[in-house]
Amino acid sequence: MTTSTASRAARSAGFNVTGAALAVLFLFPLVWSGWSSVKGQPGSAQSSGFGFGNYRYLASYGEGVVTYLVNSTAVTAMTVAGTLLVSALGGYGFARFSFPGKNLLFLATLAILMVPYATILIPLYVLLDRLGLQNSLVGLSLVFIMFQLPFALFMMRNSFEAVPRELEEAALVDGCSTFTALRRVLLRAVRPGLVTVALFAFLASWNDFFAPLILISDASKFTMPVAVYSMQQRSFGAIDYGALEAGVVVMALPCLLAFLLLQRHYVRGFMTGALRG
Image 1 (cartoon, rainbow, N blue to C red):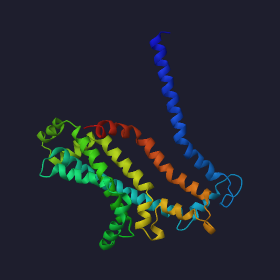
Image 2: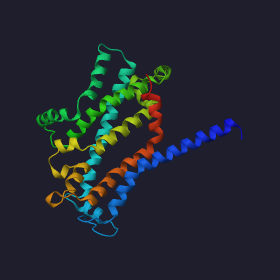
Image 3: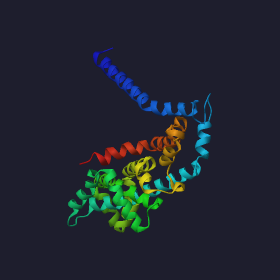
């Protein structure tokens, strides 16, 4: 075996060992949560042995886990759809058109990232109350969309800029209008960027705890993070760790499945959009 071959083999082994170690490191908390959710713990619904007592308690708590999952799904679906619609149109406009104040408007949108998350929620609470959207899943979705827009617009602007203008011009020559060219040609070209934006919007809205806690007061409209937080409390301030871990597993599984299904587009979206410029 030559020196160069041995060196490549050593580097490959090093990469494999490092990747395996990182995989174990990141998967360990999820595996531990799954183990703890079925393992008997004093003060929990599954007090001894192994079983699904914590999951049965989770299913029957309050309005029922189905209600909370439906609420989270509705908020997440509206957030993802709204973020994709606004960011696709906005990103296309910033990438393809010139208008007065274009750069200033884009920087002002990105400046939302500099404002502390918690400090905006109280003004938003007052605003949603005046609009009749306080304690509403629609109002909560609008808040999530607003917080997703800076990254989403940045991502989509760079994704559209990575698409050759000749592709759009060819569609216009063939008789397509600007909107038709966007819908039939460009959106397909920036699909990895759209998937990346959708995945970020999904993860943020599905897992967010603070905004639903502030903006939602009706227990029947709680999302899963708020429901799990309220469910874990036992008498005298004791924490039901079994129910908490069961809730964590239920919340984590959709995120894990979504990432595994979309990871190819997710990586390609970062390579073609987020790293450009």
